[in-house]
Image 1 (cartoon, one colour):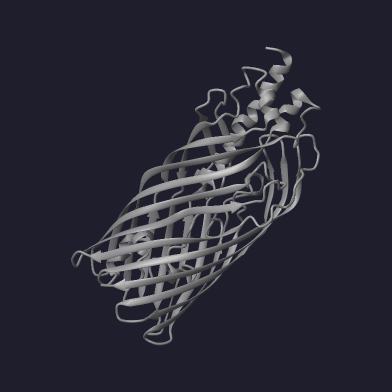
Image 2 (tube, rainbow, N blue to C red):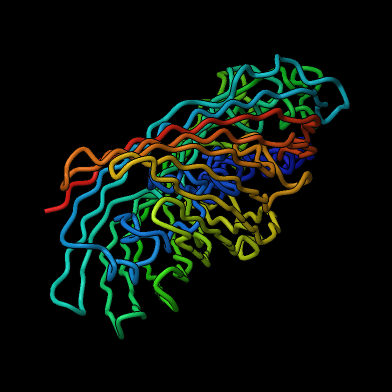
Amino acid sequence: MSHTESRLRRAARPLAFGALVLAVAGALALPQQAAASAFQLKENSAKSLGRAFAGATAAPDDASVVVNNPAAMAWLKGAQFQADVTAIDFSTHFHGGGTDAMGRPLTGGNGGNGGTTIPVPAFFFSMPINDQWSVGAAVSAPFGFQTQWNNGWVGRYSALFSKLQSIDATFSVSYKVTDSLAVGGSLIAQRTSADLSNAVNFGAILAPAAAPAFLPQSADGYAELQAHNWKWGWQLGASWKPTDTDTVAFDYHAEIKHHLNGQATFVVPPAVQGAFAQSPLTASLFTNTGGSTDYATPAFASLSYWHVFNDQFSAGADLDWTGWSNFKQLAVTFNNPAQPQSVEVFNWADSYFFSIGGDYKLTDRLTLRGGLAVDGTPTYQLTRDPRVPDASRRWLSLGLGYKATDNFEVNVGYAHLFVGDSHINTLSPTGDRLTGYFTNSADLLALSGTYKF
């Protein structure tokens, strides 16, 4: 092997797996930043959204407990079906720039608005079997995100299009131990799918061996990953009524370990294809290939409290924990033997969510709601990327409930999220450093209908 071929192969190897690692990292580790910390979604109840999820599993008459705390199904009256949909409107804009491997400014604009507006539906059914046992089933989305930046923007080597969805089919059961204590559990089938893309800086790969014919940013290509996986999980909950006016609830949702398989595709400029074809050692780089990695959606837990002050006013609080500290790195193995295993480091921290809120009954049929929340982020500057420009948030929520008949109820919830600026200082596999910050904002609007049989 010639000295030139050796340099070309050494230069090509990092991005041959690195570009795909970025896609896999974004796909597996980073689902809709508008909702909860990182890519966790709380949006499965319009009623709870109206009070910023305060007392989410302790407040009465919300069928979303099928997924949020199965024990609380014990207190639901009769069989009921509930359908919720939440529109998430997330906006993010980049401010800053960057440099390539030679220290020259990265070309391109700021990417426009990388956010989007998407609906998140959820469906719940619960029914009592007898005085002690209740069962339920639901379909919901506990994790998800979507961002899309303009082609050719300054951060194109880190992210272009990013979409991830985790859909859960949940089967729950509750048991009333006493008139004041209930326990419950759920079996969860979770499907995760991803579609992510980014530009590939082939000029930077070839520059060490083929300059000045190739320089960083002179020959951009494209990489995309599509992946999916099914896995089973579980959760356990308890609900306790120490008095007629107080309810305390606790729920623990275990992490779900995935072995996610994907297919990577590449678009390589003809000039770059010709350069790689000059050696059998580089000819197979950037050919379509499969990849796989082990990844776990994090465990999370909630502690809820609800107090009934009188016939009109009730209020509560919620404290939630998400175990993001289990997300330390991703080790990706590729089917193409020319591309060795790669490790992407994240080292996220656990995050916490705290909210207070309440209900005020104007009449027997009309209820007003309101709430405030503080939501921390597990990310930090050195490992944050444009796929999920996450930051800590503060919630302001309002809601309205209307009982149209004795059997049918409609709820509307709205929340504005004041999202902090998220700073970034990351390095792509081809030595492109992106520095700056994202300004973010989000609005949530939810509608639900509940029918009691």
